[in-house]
Image 1: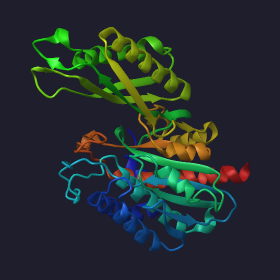
Image 2 (image 1 turned 30 degrees about the horizontal axis):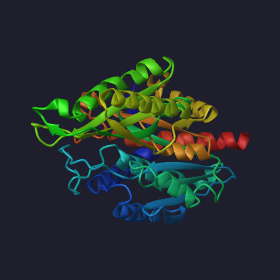
Image 3 (image 1 turned 180 degrees about the vertical axis):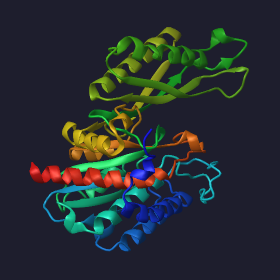
Length: 399
């Protein structure tokens, strides 16, 4: 089995780790929703300002923050950490559970903040040893999307010029001491859609005088299941889910309208456009068959996240060297992540860092009220993140 993951961490990071854990717990206790991270911003800026050697510590993107480690060389990379929480009432039972009712760090962004702060403190302790600089970005509003664009609009990639974008996401599904990273599409583009169906209401005892929107909706939900199975090539990856159906207000009244809403996940614009077109065509056919009408609205909130082949090869090599080849997997997700906006602007890599530990009964799920991580993953994130940054700076110097 070899040594446990935490035994691999350098001594200086072990000494730093209590502060990383304390930071994670502080931010976990004080979660804030997208674009409401005002207190979070203050806490991040306070901590950044207390780290000797950091430059350009300032607020960005309404409720975000940034800082710079200026190293001994021209190249610069960005390390991005998202900072917002979710509208989830916490039921973790942790002694540092959320003090903000109805809001929780249920996706690990508190860990992302703490790891980024740890990396910043580690690298700022000896910036002359770095063959380049590191721009740290604490990004608001990942869950709602929009935060990445706001950070980039505030110039975080410009001065100094950033050549590559890097970051991680903590994983409650992946065992601690493991990394999930792959080149190419790694997260999907999320497209929300809403179908508004219009029929003709009436008395439940006289269905022949009405156009029953509930029946239309039921047929439509079933028919939409054929989009992926019969309209998408088997080698393509597409998800279509109807997650919400609303209709009617009384059991003895035929509903005159119904609303279906759901999500489409795709890795390419072509697959997104094809899926939307088929949804519209199927809705038109089903509604025509029953004498109903419909409107379709859809919105794609961020692009797919695509990892650069070369940068990913560097990250994978570092992962295999640090964790062992048997602890590195390549499993793209159909989830969405607006780190994709940074990776459209600059080549880079985003990866999952394992934080699940079933032996300690730490096996929660993302976006769940009982979400939890093994805090030993924090030190691993600091050391591995620093290794990834340093390896990319060395590669940029040599290229």
